[in-house]
Image (cartoon, one colour):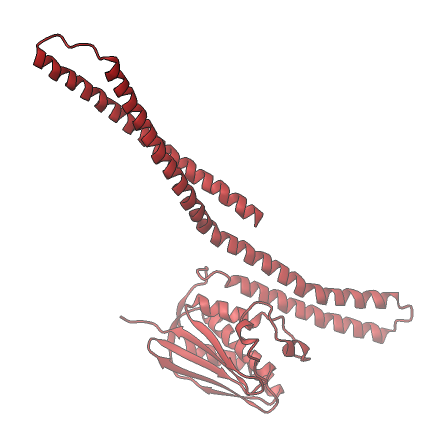
Length: 337
């Protein structure tokens, strides 16, 4: 914050310097012009007197000189006041303009700092766990081969989680800016949904969960991989928090120039206090954190929202505890007009 306040003041000073240089330059030009006009008026006045008396023009009297001098001083004073007003107004407006200019940069830096802080916090726990387990076993002089293999197996599982975490971070950074370099093309929403269902079907079968598809054929402009990832994330969440032998339904409908895709589950639902935050990065509800076997770092829904935002769509959820959840994605259809 200190750096941005300092930069804002510097930027304001540069704005003021440029504006005042322009203002003073114009003031000098105006003063020179008015000075010439005052002197011209004095000469014309003398010539009129000369014609009236038909005599040689008398020299300017001390009173005339004082009047000319006073006029010049008044012009200088008026221009000084005008420049003072310009300085004050320009300073205030320049400060506001500098703040607006720096605001997107400040928000970006703050976002990066939060990202680094959150990622470091999430990485610290598994790394500490790995280090502690290895140190404890290394000190154990009676460590058996069986226990060593168990330690290695547990460590591999933790490394797999960290690898997944790093992949999610890379995926999130890919969609961090709405106007990124991701190529868009005409894609089928139905095909993207079917690919996502096919990918998650083995996981669903492990819990004897049925995935029903009620989808129509719609085309949008976007990234096939990105849209597939959105539904993989939503289906993964639905499977993760649904009971065994339940049903997940994927349904599409068209409204206006948009297609709405809903993923409905019969899972544990989401509490009202958590709903405003579920798309925040690294956010996990208390019950989700305490639930064993769910895994994850709270990045999935954040990634899904970034992808949907990049496609100029929207995503929202309707849910209550113990009544399931409905995640709905809205995407603009291709316009042929």
